[in-house]
Length: 309
Image 1: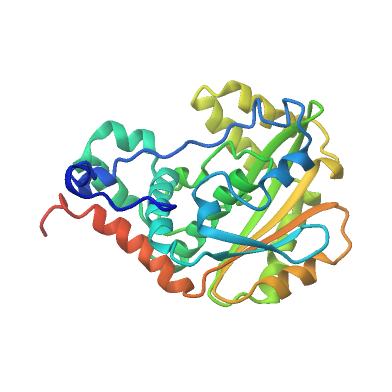
Image 2: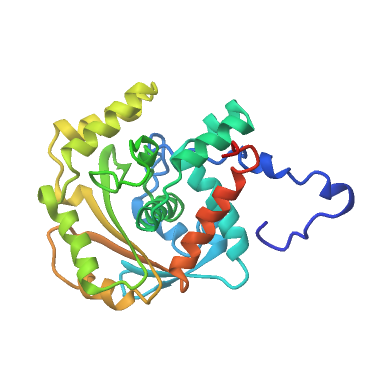
């Protein structure tokens, strides 16, 4: 629980979910980019400013945001004291939603849900690190920026211990009826270095800074398969019309144990044909332990009905 709510006792304690129910708790779906604040006439800048210091969900309670340049394009997020346990609980729900889907887990009951989550969780620390970084980046985008992320890509992995190909995260919003696209590259490292941020920038520059066509096609296809046709049309528009540099935003998002500010700032100062370039780093001092904490807890939630070897 975030905030100052006391832990329940007495009759309230009886209402605390049984451990098997924790696996089935629903989490919010992706923020749709159709009908966003930008569509309603709110400018992108105003929307961004309104979310710059506090996220709209659990992340705003978990982290503090410090801006490292005059334009607000370099931000470092650090954990607030005393929020780790609540953040891990929230992230466990978010990870399950990104890897499987809260709607699916809520329909099939605990034993099947436990098995499904257990066999979907990555087991290799490098993949756990990469997937968690991408998931947290998506949460950041939806809580702190004007963009919505139409598709949780990690649900579509065919091998839990292999990274997905294509752009890490694609977001979209509309300004004055025109689509504006976010292309994000995510890096998770215990010790971030300048070369890693450079790799992220190089990936963002591919395809003349625009989203990878195959990534857009993949997103549109998945949206069509779930009858989200209006959203799919917005993605297909990006595939069939020219996207100008003014309509593209780049985001480098990092998760690291060391201070990312020097490396992010150095690249943010470089001149670039994409004017809106954002660099965000989440610093978690015990980077590796933090990742293990989340995936160990997720694994523990699935063990009650696991078959005996």
